[in-house]
Amino acid sequence: MNDLQPAEGTRLRLYSELASWWPLLSHPADYAEEASFYGALLKSRCRSPAPTLLELGSGGGNNASHLKEEFDGLTLVDISPGMLEVSRTLNPECEHHVGDMRSVRLGREFDCVFVQDAIGYATTLDDLRAVVETIIVHCRPGGSFLIAPDYVRESFLPGVSHGGHDGVERALRYLEWTWDPDPSDHTYVVDMAYLLRGPDGAVQVEHDRHHLGLFSMEEWLAVFEDAGLAPDVEMFQHSELRGEMRVFVGCRTDRHCRSSNGEST
Image 1 (cartoon, one colour):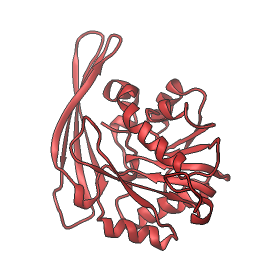
Image 2 (cartoon, helix red, strand yellow):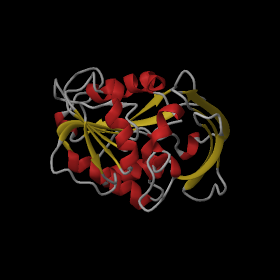
Image 3 (spheres, one colour):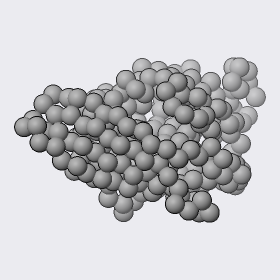
């Protein structure tokens, strides 16, 4: 399960009263492979030799727990105060801010801006445009950006997965059911069922329904083009997941960035 971010006005229990259970649902060690891939891509397109990084929709900080070793300072933004508390425990050296990735304005620029699967909570094209604008506002000329949605329309895979971890005196197991009730619109659904076992052995069952955005490659590229950006599309195949992910990575301004082989463009 990935670090997800609810849209403004949406209440998901995992990101509110159940946020402290997050480390038992999604362990930081599970993020090493993808964080290494994302970090290398961001740095390959960035002009700065010691880049700073802003992560929008940072959730419980699992990506940051790996990326903080690769960047000269991380700033993390998430809409959920509870998830940021989890991240502060894991990443006390990072700067944390509560904010919506569509509208947050920190008043400064960064060398790299990163959005992973939190982009799924952009469920309309207007939402997507707003997130891209937030990236542009915070990414300095010569800097790089990366957006890694779980799916584009062409790569969508319905299915079921499960997992969880044991902690000190409590444990969690989850069932994740991904499906698309209406292939003609811009959303799909992830139903999450949680089994939460407390110190006394009693188990409670909770459910969240995540409504997530699903856009075609043509729609993604049109949003970037309208914003004056022309990212590359990289493919990422996680060793433990089905299907290939489309990752959008590019430069704040092409004339100031480096290509993936390190040459100036």
